[in-house]
Image 1 (cartoon, rainbow, N blue to C red):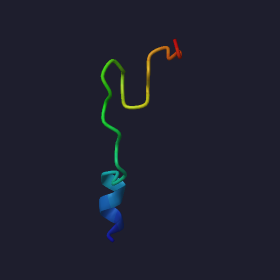
Image 2 (cartoon, rainbow, N blue to C red):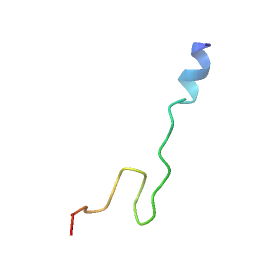
Image 3 (cartoon, rainbow, N blue to C red):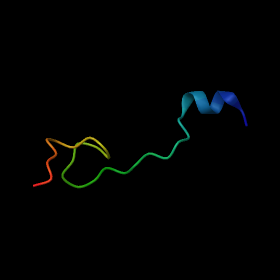
Image 4 (cartoon, rainbow, N blue to C red):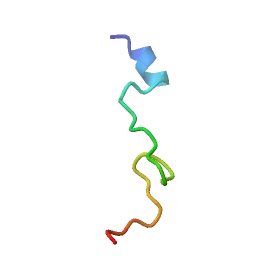
Length: 33
């Protein structure tokens, strides 16, 4: 494993952007109801 490649591009799996959200995890104002 070359360290240089991991510094430039993060190899961890990114969650895909869900529908109706700003990002994969970042919701607007999340509430159960």
